Length: 183
Image (cartoon, rainbow, N blue to C red):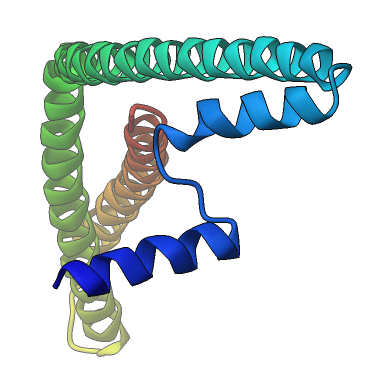
């Protein structure tokens, strides 16, 4: 075992391996052989110290920046949570108006359906009355009454047509409002 260790040390020395503690000896040997090299070694040591100092400064800066990044991430997460909460609160302010418009849309839609149904019923009544007027067995008095009823029905149809058109326009406006209030 002692022989193996000794052989390894000799081989290392021959190969130029640096063993800790040998650096001082190597420096002395190099300066002894070339006294001007001492200045170069001093400059090397100064630069090595400067490099080590710069690396430590960079490590400190990296550590500081990493802490700042973590802090900024935390602040951003908190800010995002607050903004999302405020967005929900703000959107909730329009909720009553949106619900009112939805209810108005529902009611206007039902009313339009009813008016269209009434219009269809009146149209059928007018058709039946006209067919009845074509028959010959009616008295003059009945015909006058039927014509009056036909006029009344025609006026009712015209009124319903106007109301239906106005209601359709109102529905279109409500749908437009609903679309505009989406967030």
